[in-house]
Length: 266
Length: 326
Image (cartoon, chains in turn cyan, purple):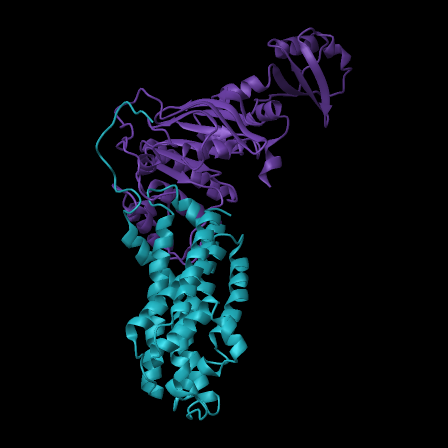
């Protein structure tokens, strides 16, 4: 490592062009209508669809205990939609993007330029996170305007839970996307995790409507913990320490494994 | 894989273009194995400024591993590699600023448009070329706003070359430049590469097409089973491939071939579709003509066969290059 001629010019290699890359990835994201629909619009469509199509969704549930007394099923779905948004991005678009960029050599091609392939990952993260934020905000706005759903009692906790849910779900996404040999395989694996996650989050039995046994199992799944913690943020019943810890543990575990197994090339 | 250089030493700058005496690339004793398989086994060569060097060889010969070591995509096990005065494994960052690489089988995002791809890649470099100028140079004006997925094979290849050039590189590494292109597109690409070289870019071309190497390269390097088996200009290699002279002879009536094989300068005589193909030493052509003339025979047609790079390749590698083309 002894160099005969040393100069003091340290180039900005690796970050130059990052803004252009983020713009480029945003344009590509928006051109893919499937992405825009699933990440940004789908949770809202799901909420509105269930709110109007399923009978009794907008009637108060009679036999609920205290914090939930007088709420309607559709109210229980509003916080859940934030978790759905995080899971949709993390388990469908993130792994598909990553695996396809590896499969087609996009990352390899970029690694020959001054831009590092990590830049693509960073740009994708920015785009997906904005997608989740917009999708979540849209779902809440529609829930408020169409159904008059209450907003969170503890907004700071709601934001924290969303961040942790995104971290855990993106952990799955990066793990799958960095390992799967093909984009199609990555999408398939993502779906395989997506539906059980939605089930444990209570998409079919929201909040207090979930059977006790399932609820106890769900507490230890990343999205189940997120849904339960989000309920606490919404309807105000203290700090869900166990669920917060579960999400942090999943995020740390998944990103640690992903970092060790990630391959830049197929 | 850290994004920032964390070593305490400052970054070395690449050799500037006024230092014309030094070769652009110097490789000595490069060795690389994957597990127990030896991919590159002691390869040495240089590339001089402003030349087009072709690396030829069958698939699996070690061509791609060699160029990947130059581009800093792989670390060699042994040997020294110097590209523009930099070691790709130690100083990859400044090297990437002055090196343009076109990789085999690397695609772009399907919905990225031609001009967007060029602008994106241009943004990675300190002193990029104007994307619009490259669009004209590579004849992509009509496809400027077309998405990558809707380009033809030739257009994708031209875009890939444009991306390798957008950083204003001093050295361009082009891997399997014209694979998958139709004959017309191949010739156009060759013209383009010559124009690029004339603009001052040194070019390292990896190929398995003999006609491409013969047409474009100032020098070629034939690699087989991880070793350099021949090096020289295409004409030198072609001559070396076939020691003697071969010509074809057409006569009005068949003759007894022993009359010719008895001549000391004749090595072989064989009949190919009514035509005699005769090989031999330096004086074989006049010897045969005189021998025939002494018997009152005058050939109707004589055709000398120019040795080709393809022949040399078959001789060196033991099989034709087109086997690999599939």
